[in-house]
Image (cartoon, rainbow, N blue to C red; front, side):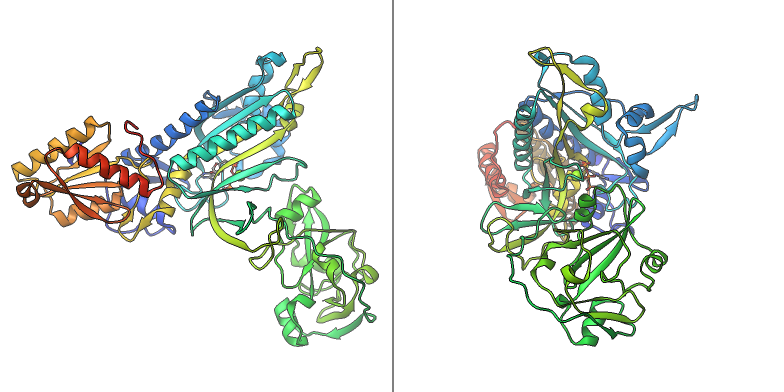
Length: 580
Ligand code: ATP
Ligand code: MG
């Protein structure tokens, strides 16, 4: 393929609205263009990267026994009403009507459609297990689409759904998908972690997320430096505190704390440390008031709170609600004498006593609060974010924190959808049973962005070889020179003969200009064909990742190239399959 005839509209300037590097580079390298907020067109190079990613995903899904299908994107509302999600899914679900005023949505995910399909197809245990997947456009009306391909409204997902007779079957299907995902991200050349993830409030379900480690990730990955523990911050439990002998605590006493709305102000005024304070946070959980008590030096984890309460919506109370529920302005709520039924406390608070808390009066706090004696705490549970100085919840050793981009999610659904949509089969005894389901998603378009977030430098993209739109770029450094062009064309043909995707930069531009574009586009292998080298009987090759250059002899170029290519792949931790 010749670059002079290939559509690669590179830009010199960074797009103003792009906050993250993958967004900037995908636009600058002419790979994507925005149509409107969170909705992008893939240009030829971008599409090639997407297709290469999807190909690896498909190969590993097929290898794991999943079968590809293609489901509709437009889904009827009645199916979503049947599952209960028409009302639960909220505003990310884009709803529309046809000419007969019938309601539909654009599929953000396909549990309803696949379960509907299967319930009409499968009758007997003999037909199970089955695992179907698709690679398809999803639509989620994200509240804040951003970061280019990382958080779109329209994006490409691979979603798979498994149906089994029982829990043991589901465990096997889940394991096989987990292993397939591990192979996929290894083959893509990405540095990733599989972590325990939050599964929402559905008790007992299991899920893992696959995270590509990158500074710009929106998720925090917590892992242990000693054992195998790894979890999403949302999920990672803070180790349960050891039982402490009762400490005696004087009776509560009110003190003036003018203007001390925050723990920091309060600690400064009273000359205490924040961990002596109990912070009282008020929420509306599905409209009902809830108080959450946490240590003053900790952050509340609202996912943990929401799951504990089994709430669909959890919102921080407004200033008016706080005044109505506590009689005090924001910043002075406390558990003593609080007129709220549901008071839950972080279990670290079982560890001490003699707390400082709000007094439910403006500009006042209590000293010497014993939660068991002076307040009505309904439950103690894990409510706060784990911190780097906490011990590993499993082995007690040191933790490590990384930022991550969620690229995949595997999930045991159990019988949630088979119950609501009545997907049953007859077992060996002829008894009707619910199918056990799993669902498994991969953000195919997000992976392209994640590759770049993890692999780039100041000059541009550094594509892992398996994802790169073309594996190699041949640069004819002086395209007007016939000898140079002829050699560049010959090398291109040789590489294509080896089964590589090659883009030949045959444009009549200065070498410096071509080097810049080649680095921006980020194909892993660069072959620099110049007149001087040809006279010496060599061409220079450059590994985009390391920047290392070396000369390969022109006679028997293929042999030298193969060895070098293998080295470059090995640098990515990848094995080069000769005809891959
Ligand atoms: P997130 O927490 O990032 O919103 P999610 O948990 O809602 O994602 P899933 O429902 O598990 O996502 O979807 C499966 C995969 O689809 C995710 O792991 C992610 O890679 C991808 N994905 C989800 N939402 C988006 C989006 N808005 N843009 C691009 N990819 C997405
Ligand atoms: Mg997820």
